[in-house]
Length: 515
Image 1 (cartoon, rainbow, N blue to C red):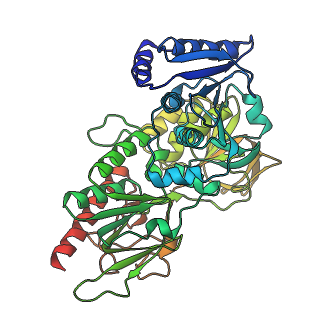
Image 2: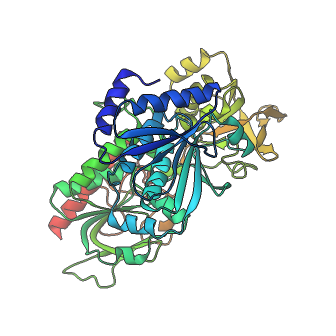
Image 3: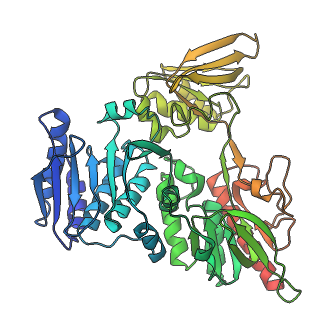
């Protein structure tokens, strides 16, 4: 079951166990049960601090991880390999006496929750799922009233289908759907009733530079600012940005291949090591000149969505962009019920089924190529007469025998009962209407900047909502700079966003030296 190198890595982790861990195994005689039993037995052989006992659990096959202290249930229904192997290893360590790596404020928020039984349906290829699984497992370790079960979707297809799960992670509380898609510890805590308040930000002194955002532009800006020795803060709903939705990245100089979550995790380590005050779990709602500014000390205020106000001598806005909606019937109604955006996370759920991809740019064609290896058939719909993707991607697409490309296609609606069943489009040349039976639709039609909160501010935007910036990253509001996909930067690429973050930070530093 476990390859030798994986066994060796896990054995090193299990050597860190401080106390005994009991694995409660719930299996029968079927093939999947044999897989789970084999996995558990191989793990148990790696440490004398692990013991295995038979136990009846809600799902079979599954197993429970139990430490020698009072904590909530931590259950894995399925074999936690792939991206979930790290979730399993961390759960073992935490049940074995290793303190979870959360700050004191987060720990108090977890301990204040009344409790609940949570389940997360995942796919092992989903790179957004582990953060949800690991966050709930940490909650269960710190709060004995919280229970969590990871359900591996391909092994428990009947559970996924009975709950109409067509996107992962899918989170359930007491058996009822709670939320789907990418989440962080902060967003999950808010979701289940433990919100950050303005009091959590009340002790913050004015920064030399405050960065708004958590993607590569914001991270790079904070790195450059902190290395100048100035007090630096970063506030965002979460750290990582849109990049963590990207699995394979092959166009960053010095990296033949990396993955979005790994790339941003490395950035996070670097930002933290430099002493940047990273504040997550809040969104900026306004930016303005502080009322108490003077010629001697001009300050900028950033108001957050929880009512808190942060102050800084300079601000860098790097709020990035999100997937653009196309505004058709069914687009929002069937989100997580067939409408999806991440092929790596949700593609495996459509195995053997027909799907559509809307968009003929690089993102759309990459999605179609990825899906072609998992699903029965892919139909690509492009509004324009020609695809916009790079020729190398088009050549790869044309080599696949289960892909159809329809150009001049205006998608008019997505329809079904409880989940997506068909897509309708109009041929822009003939005006004929067509219908395609699909189980899934991946929408890849570009990005829209996250700048709505600036519409009433003195920061000038284009008619597309992009922040107008000068060559040094400065904006129309003195002391405020901007970077990344939220700006008028012509190309939306990771390296370009990162570079513009450096530019904005250096621009802000030059401003500080002169004022």
